[in-house]
Structure formats: structure tokens, C-alpha cells
Image 1: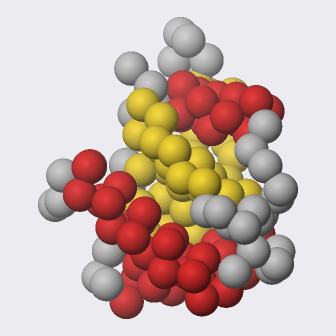
Image 2: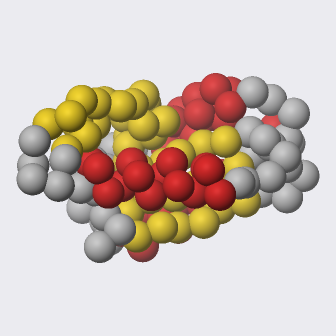
Image 3: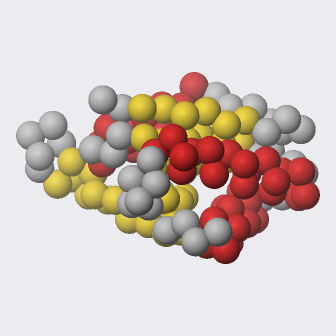
Length: 123
């Protein structure tokens, strides 16, 4: 099992490689498929469109949502293919982390000429 920072570094490097090759003109699903494929090739455990349970603060199950990618069962990857990241995109990832009781997440935007990657931690 790799340390979380090592996993984040692998995802970052792989994302840069994908962005360098595919640039910024594709739909989000293309980047999701590419990142899933390339992480799998590296032997990294990754699930695509993985369901995660959403909990209320008392632990009651409220439902589930599907994360773009879940790396090693502990790193949520939220992908975008838009001009710029907005506060709504950040709020979406933070809500996913909080409601699923997952600590670490990466928000990645492939849609701009410059790749955007930012790590978020929910304590």
C-alpha cells in the first residue's frame, strides 16, 4: 500500500502526461477513461464510476453517488473538462469527501490549456 502523497504524485504525473498528449479539447469522459487506463497500466488499484455511500452526521445512510475515480479505495478523483474551475466544483468535491467520510481528494481540470490539479483534505 502506497502512502497517500505518493498516490497523489502518481495521479498528478499521469494527468500531466495525458494532458500533454490529448490537450484540452475532449469531453470529460475521455480524460476519465485515459486516467483509469493509465493508472491500471501502472498497477495502481483504481475504480471508475465507483459508488460511495453518503452519510448524515449521525451515520444514517442517505444514498450514494458515483465518483469519477476512486484510487486505492481512499483517494477520490473528481475530473472536469471546462475552461476554469469554479467554487461549485470545489464544493462538490468537498461535499463528496465529507459525506462519504473519505479524507483525500484531487480536483483535476483537463479542459483548460493549462492543467489544473489541486488536492483537498477533509478532516
